[in-house]
Image (cartoon, rainbow, N blue to C red; front, side, top):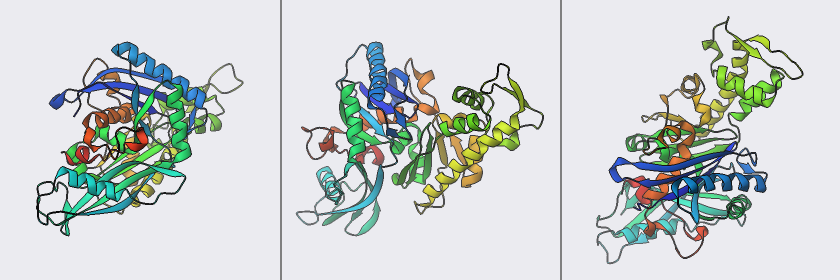
Length: 406
């Protein structure tokens, strides 16, 4: 584990966030700098304006460099595009001499073997995460090192993304004057920021309600089972409000943040709200419940889309619960709505960090950025495979130690 300062970048649909942190060992993560810059260069997880996205990234990184007094060459960043997905792969290696104890090198070798799956010419790998090891046919092994065996197998979750999407991200980072150290599947990053080890083991779901996208990560027995990014987020709520109430987008966002509720039934019939409509010089009084009915309609749609993604995992029970993060999770009654739709215990997650920025970073919208830092600090360098001398494409972290608790 490194204790050096790491810089991470979270490219969101409404803002670009940069964070610098170092490990304090058992005390956790120490955040030494954070900055968020509004950005209009992404739409639903896709870069639509590279120049604008690079500008926002450069501003956020420069501010963190100023605060920390350090200059960074490379960064770790999250990829939250709907085009990024995971698939299950298998790996197998014989153990020679027959019956000797399995070593760390054997584990890394079998994971690397599982990565030898055929990907289309338009996609490339980001990560390989072991789900289960099998030792001489015995299933359910999480930590095979030290076990005597003649054969080691692994079931791996391999994350791939469209090459053109990843190339666009790389160009943005280069325009900002930096290099990419590695990329992380955004649903994983969000989970790393808030989930406790016991929740991973029991089985849980992490939902990141962002502005332009909603990411879902399903875990069981300490490893990811399913991950996806849905191209609908809380910014659509503001858009719905502005269209149906005939307001500006800024007014729709204000109404959502100040008076919104994901369950209209929780709002009293006599509660009112003043709305400034387009072309008007004075606000118009309106029932707050009308506003919240618009909000609930979109939020319920998102919750049902999440439910459909969770169902793809094949799991129906999550003793570790459902954890909501992201800016959209802070709206009133959002946890209650998701609990109703998913039929599971739901809580809002917030990163636990130390340092002068902890009051800012300890908010649900910074879960992915904090998770990226945890990933960068907790992944061992000898898990880089196969060639640490190359660029980020040659350094596919297995995340083996991070998810297995070493």
